[in-house]
Length: 204
Image (cartoon, rainbow, N blue to C red; front, top):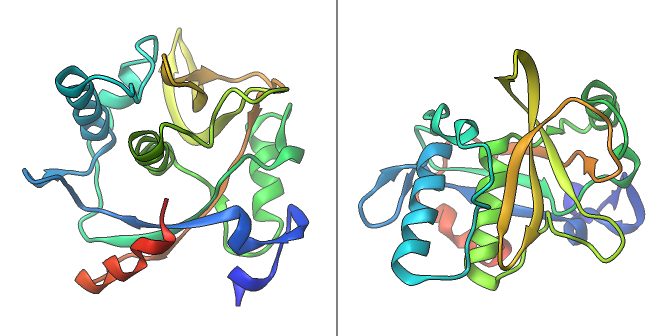
């Protein structure tokens, strides 16, 4: 059982301690809005404007990172994702970060921006906390496989640096930094019936 095995990046802990299982929706809310990254961004901003704090996304985030991503799952699914960065992936270029995850041979890959943004937004709205936060010693930003053309360059998008006042920041970088790292992820079911909500107690 993968969940009961040692975390390959933190052998002193089990996978179940360092990973979450999350229901991946196809539609959001009572209006059944498509669960695209663009709509996650829009709905969280609408919620902030209507109810006030907590703010999910930092106002300084790169808006284009959200608005160009309208794809969404056609069915409800499940995915597993590490809560925090793999510490050994910091200060590396993306290709080397990705190699660290894939070489484990466990079917894991770098977490996409949409799925990481969904996990972070749910955590912020439920508890006012975020896995991609401003740690006491080092801030954390998850670098994703998603790219965007910015200032004439193809750049990877990252998400992180959360603070309760500002929200979580989304922008680009192609340069290794101590605050940037990678989060392993895998889709464990592409189509799940309504009984998938039984997994709710295992989600954030």
